[in-house]
Image 1: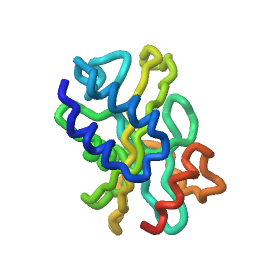
Image 2: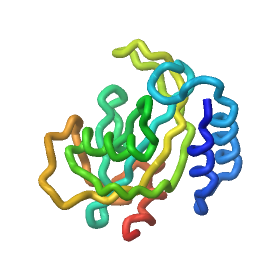
Image 3: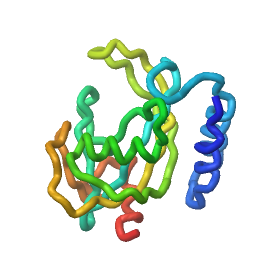
Image 4: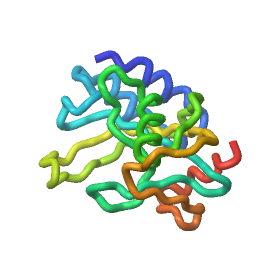
Length: 167
């Protein structure tokens, strides 16, 4: 499959901290001879997360199966870009709408544990993380429990994103 657009977007990250991770993710995308969107591939899939600040706090959700605090995120569906996924998932999971503008700030390779409820085997996600801006309008009903957390309250793996809070 052609993932050139995603590779180009990743390589344009000027703040990418880990060149080894960058190369690993780009190699996985370049060498994938199967569709990574949707859930067709049981071993490797694309996902996207939204980083949205309100004042000094970042939005988080409680994951429905893992029961841990994570960024709003989900699978990139067929025909959808990672950026579109980040916006859609943020709106669905939190109930809040975001502006159309998004900025890719990080990409991660994440090991997803076995999901007993869905009988999904352990697999990997290439997760695109976008900085989004919340629209000032009345939210819809959220799908998941939503939290606004300060940097000190946030899980450690997400604390590095708080330097984006005024951007």
